[in-house]
Length: 136
Image: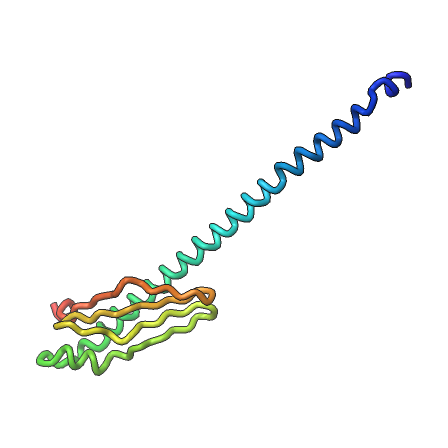
């Protein structure tokens, strides 16, 4: 029992030092965990925007393919303008995409795609369709 009396508070000093080290490094570790979680969420949201935009591109292509058999070769632009159902919106729970009215320039139809994921809209580069591509 004599050796305990000779330490003069060494155990208390070690405990305080350990608590101080934990107090310094704990916020750094918590910050890193929260930061990586936020980054993962942002990447996941961006991937959802891209997948929704791809769905819209596929919808546009399928719409052109489905109505091309009925098209009048003399007035392709007029026929497609009349028979395309746009603006078109597809709600998918908390996500949706909107295809806007096309801007027509010659035989090119230029569509704007707007996707929304978790209430955050994103506009994608215009999608240009040349109707002559469907008659070759």
